[in-house]
Figure 1 (cartoon, rainbow, N blue to C red):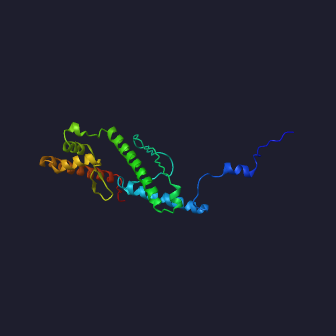
Figure 2: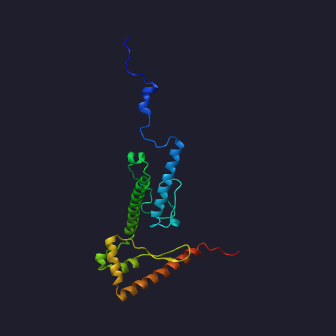
Length: 225
């Protein structure tokens, strides 16, 4: 009878190499590793919330407990409201860990936060752009003839909102560095009649916003018995 010279499958010593986790762990106790990972996750979350607040007020942030998109049966179908993943990765040199280089923490975490913020901004601007295009709220400065003319056209197309305190919220303009220089120069050299028309539109849009808010609130007004 011939014997199989290979090691039996149930030999613990033989299976150790294939079942052992290949990752390098910096903590002897699993609970320490869990605490560290949780701490890093919370820190990245706080950094992301700080960056996110530059675009969206924390009071306007909603969180899902389940599901992957918003659904409102009383509304017409909206643009893309599904969840999108934001992910990133980073490489941690083992030498820096062995050298106990604490600066590695900032050098590792900050790029992660910056990359996630960049992806969030791209996604947000993409959704806003798609929503604006779907209703025709798009202005082309070249077609308008000038930056100031495009501002007038932009103001005439939009509707202003009202915040929780009843104050009209003015629109924000987000531009890149090159466009910012052109916009700043145009605003600085704006002709008086153009500035007057812009102020007139702001006042008109503000009154319309307050009127819409008053009508909305009237729907929920309780009558006295």
